[in-house]
Image 1 (cartoon, rainbow over the protein chains, first blue to last red):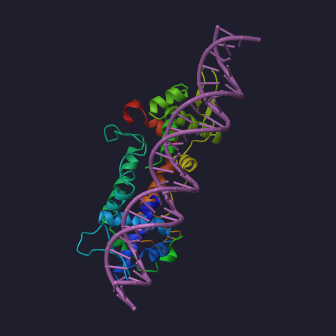
Image 2 (cartoon, each protein chain N blue to C red):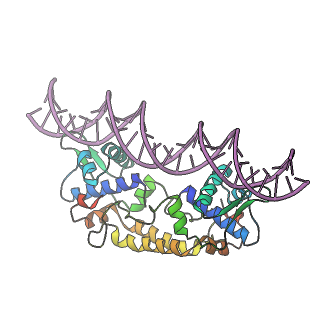
Length: 143
Length: 143
DNA sequence: TTTTTAATGGACAATAAGGTCTTTTAGTAT
DNA sequence: ATACTAAAAGACCTTATTGTCCATTAAAAA
């Protein structure tokens, strides 16, 4: 569904938040292992997440990644826009620029509601809400 | 939503079928122009469509692309599987291998119905049904 | 203050997606 | 037959995605 960068970013952030909730502060090695993603690439992605301001990093011994609890929650939509852009969230399946009720593409009527559902979902769900739902063992479910 | 190949293939095939319904047999130059896609790339994609057997081609003067009316209709799903694979149609947004009702990823409950809708849509709609819905000028709606 | 630890930065490599160009092949019409 | 037309084939190119590697920097512990 999403591209790799979005997927790894999503899993990483949810994992970090999930650990933070238990007062733990995971590092890159642990994160990459748990979410089953390439370590160096995950590091690169998390670097971007830090620059954007989605999450904080702490260097040195005992360091790792932490969320700033005082900051607003991060929606899935914000994350997607930061990684792969709006492609999945807007535009019609036919690739038309002007596709609306008046000038509908052949898929318009059936596709509209689906796209709306996706947008609703990614606007409502946040890294935090997803981390709360992650109660079982994390790693065993991936790959 | 879809990748370029799927998009161009979809638009091409729907355009061809739409023209066929009017007893016309468009060639590559016309098709690429009308669907606003790169000609050489569209040619390559249509070549694949011909090899797969989705559409027929006729060489030489008066040639072009035609659907075999005796063949079964082509669903959007068949097309997608042939171009970009099942990625959009299956798997969970979280990238988990085992994501089901028993071991749900944090997105499972909300994502399931959306994915089902997409699958229903692409299984029901065909090149032919989309071509029938294309009654207005084709080109003006794209880009 | 030195050592250790862990993230950062940036260059680089591999693969896939998207796209072009030229020659060949197979038809059609004259 | 010959000329013309249009798709087929395949080599090649460009860009984006998905990575790797290594030196640097910042923080904590000893």
